[in-house]
Image (cartoon, rainbow, N blue to C red; front, side):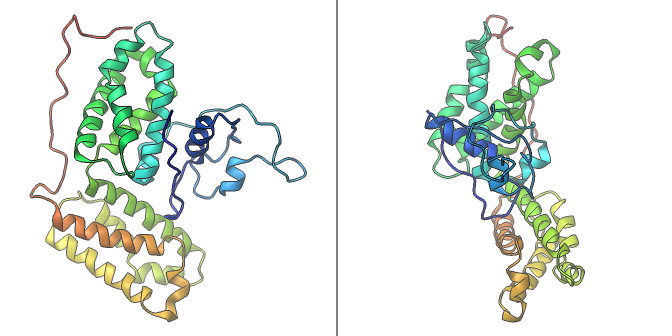
Length: 298
């Protein structure tokens, strides 16, 4: 029926509880609802985000009508872990398959976008990260989505929320592992920065941990560069110093600290292990247009 992999909250990053609860409850045929606020909010607590409160403060007994969340921006999708991103794709894919069932040419579009193959791949993954074959398929489908989105002839097919969400999610999910680590590390550093804003000495700690320098380094292409890696490793040493000194436990326990430190470790290792091209996407032409006999139409 579907994929019931929950979002992980242990990274303190942006999350979308809608996708988890919508999919979990629809899978088990239970009533489901969403309060309609905080879909993409870092600050919205899970309890209030998922369950609207009555005037007395207790959870509402009658489910409200399910509504779709806002279409995520590229920046919001970049914040997601691979697991969270896969869930978002899984939910929007199920919705798009149903949307296409309402069109006379729906089956042709399903074949054109290889949606059955995509669903099988996403369902079979053990863990959130795509393997090479899945990433290649997602990249191919993402190109098809982008090409269709740019063609006003196909507006009816590309207008649904499900298509627009897949358009964003597939593009992010097709990135290489090191590119994704770059994106999620940036999000983790932002989380730590917000935590430090609530500490009286937060400004000094941001300077010591070189948070601004780290964010600048992460805006550079994720390709191995000896000087950049050297700077990243220097910042990591500062995180290690804090983590290993009990005197600074209050800082090490802040939301965002541990995951930023771990992300730095993984990112520097990934950069060193990348091939000569650094894992950057190689420019390639769009897929060739289909023949008139095979081209799908509205």
